Amino acid sequence: MVDKTSSYKDHVSTITEDGKGRKWMYPKLIKGKLYILRNIFAGALLTLLFAGPFIKVNGEQLILLNILERRFAFFGVIFVPQDFYLFVLGTLIFIVFIVLFTSLFGRVFCGWACPQTIFMEMVFRRIERWIEGDAKQQKKLDNGPMTTEKILKKTSKHFLFLLISFLISNIFLSYIIGSDQLIQIITEPLAGHVTGFISICIFTFVFYIVFSKIRELVCTMVCPYGRLQGVLLDSNSMIVAYDYVRGEPRGKRKREAEPDVIGDCVDCGLCVDVCPTGIDIRNGTQMECINCTLCIDACDMVMKKINRPKRLIGFFSDEHITNRKQFTVGRRIYSYAALILILSAILSFLILRRTDIETTILRASGTLYQMRDDGTTVSNLYNAEFYNRTSQSIKFQVVPQGSGTQIQYITKPEELKKGASMKITFFIIQDIKNIKSYKSDIKLQVLSAGKVLENIETTFIAPPN
Image (tube, rainbow, N blue to C red):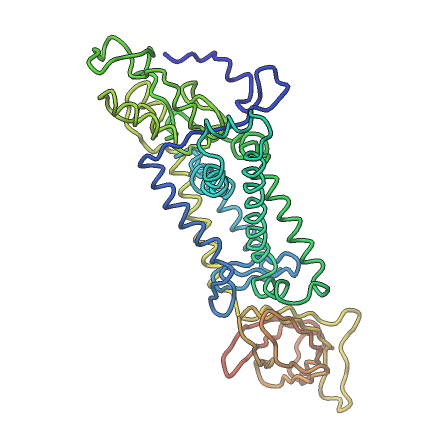
């Protein structure tokens, strides 16, 4: 039985036992089936990440998060500050999805899809192994004297780290300012883009420090997601875990050893050697575990050598390990799923009913009605702002609904360019004989090429008959 009072709960795996220094990680590389699948998945995500800023949908960047200009685009759909409620709803759906996913599968996102893990394990550590060798060779090099070979290897490694960090910073910046703007910064004289160049340098420095120095500390000390696992997981959650019922008691065993005499775990420590955060998965669920599944591949390799069934370490729930119960979906999971479906349906409805032009119309503040010179009509002054949500320029006009209503422009509407806004001022004029009360509602339409882009409604005041 696993020792639940183990001292692993009292310290962080990346800190030395005396608490005064950092324990540098030298994870071994085991190329098992899960590692290969993880490579394929990571390759697909990296391809999407690097290609995303240069893919255009309806003339817009696939994903744009231009916080500076308050302009956002997702799969060709433009979102403006007036759509903030959609952003809030979308964020809420994402949070509930994270809670649902974590409740089901633990921290798999961290090990398989998190950019920090993908870049660290699939890019930077590969470069490190290519230049400095495997885990033993890296450790020997770091602990050895400063030789010419060591200087060359370290210089080459950190030069490549800086180069890749610079590339990553350009890609991330293109998601913020747009790929077209980034290309301008790169191709045009530096004097015209000093701010952009400084931003790229800052991004480069941050990425370089994270992937060359901080590394797994991002997962174990900085990222808050791992600390949420304690409240999100339960005994039915599927996580990377050690089957201590089958594995204990540990000990060396031969191929022909009786399975009832000793547990399947041979205490080789390979699961610890491959862990990028340095934990011992046999001690139970730990905050530092990112569910990267490297320990599963390592243990499967050992089990194969001693002719024992694989998955001594695997995706298990605590109920499966202790009571051998099959995974079941509980009411909490169904509740999360139902909430996601409801919120997603609401978000889809709100997006579908969005109009091409966002219109805000207000009667000019501080003004009352105006009697016209002919004595038979009365007017109100209005200010209106129009925002083009489409990916093309639009020519439009405002048309009143109902007879006896006219519009007199002070500022006429012009062509509204994509992603741009426009303010116009105009009078709405009505026949006084049609007015029954001091305040009434009037309806207007925004038309473009005969198509109704939006129906709007405002109030009109006048002396009643």
